[in-house]
Image 1 (cartoon, one colour):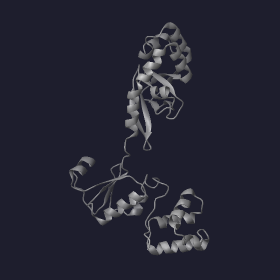
Image 2 (cartoon, rainbow, N blue to C red; image 1 turned 90 degrees about the vertical axis):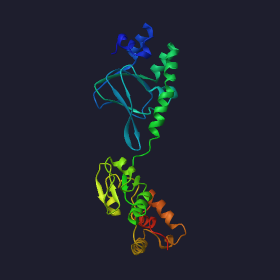
Image 3 (cartoon, one colour; image 1 turned 180 degrees about the vertical axis):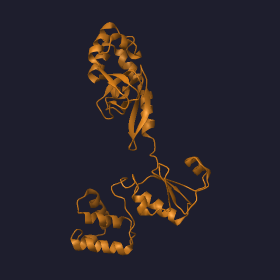
Image 4 (cartoon, rainbow, N blue to C red; image 1 turned 180 degrees about the horizontal axis):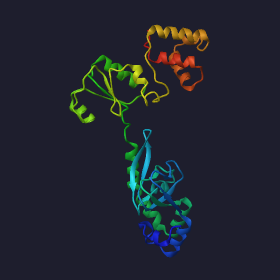
Length: 289
């Protein structure tokens, strides 16, 4: 259990009287964590935290990746925004080194605020800085999954760009030999073809990869509901015929004006069989005519 003396060393509580400090010693949750352990997670119930010792980091899931958005040291607070605005925790708290943290849940905080109104005012005053920190963290653009290198007018380059765009896979395109590419990859930007050259986040490069090879890359194959590959007209016709013959896609349904969009919707929601989903994949990237 935390002591009155330890509480008094935390700036927020340094001016409290004996009554308030004694109340806190029995009301707060005294948490000890080892490196990598969490005191709480993003989305959890609101609470105010004060760091007693050690070092912790605040992390938030941004674009699917856990990202460190702030560091807290002894005497500092976390949780001011959710406590003031009555919202869930906007970030997780994880220990960087052996640490000790005290936690005031909503009931404890508001009881203390009723005893000493200045406590609530002090916590609310920190909201602007904290909210700006959260705003900046949330506005970070997603990191490109693939860096495409090659001439902007190269047909193969254009084909890969179109494929990635259609499947909502983030990418960045730069031409070989440009200062922008040199700055991006941290080395001279003269990357030899044939093009395009696809560079992955780990530095791996694929020279003139097929669309199927790109679709099979880790992280890309799970990027969306389904990764679609263009299929030749003959394959498209045969796929429609097969699906219709099997009963998965009624023949008259395929002749409807909005068959493509309807098939896509049904494929996404899983209301038809695997055969109709395959037909949807063939329809999406096949031009009419």
